[in-house]
Image (cartoon, rainbow, N blue to C red; front, top):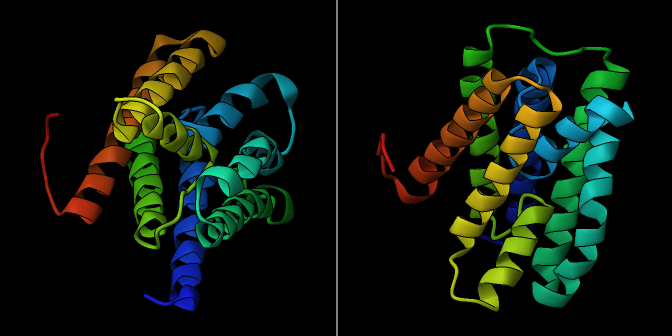
Length: 198
């Protein structure tokens, strides 16, 4: 895959990821892991534009990209973060669309699956979809812990935070379900495996 094709993959993956976050997850207070989930939780208090908040969370991590990831991949990661943040705010602020407020069970599965699809497409271009993936890569490179395990741990922490901040155990459970749906779709696309249990 050449560099132009990689950027096209990143563009489509980031847009699909953004639709999952803006249309299904954020509208229903479901905090998937990573910068989008953290932004949904923090936005409860900060009341900022969601995409801008996602960018602010990822921005410091962008600098780490250049130190720990090759430069071409780092530029694609920055592109991914910018497209994701812009698309979320484009949906909310410019289109004025506040998402589908539907049953949280369906929102968590559909939103998590769309985010998983977007992330998998981005990863296929040898790019990190967001900032926390960079942290996971750094920790994995300097320890015995696998990158995927680090990401799961960070996602679980964000899910627990969502349950505490929104003061609703159901939010935490639906958030966990969205993380599960996301991981299953990534697993299916990247490794062509379908497993219903870990």
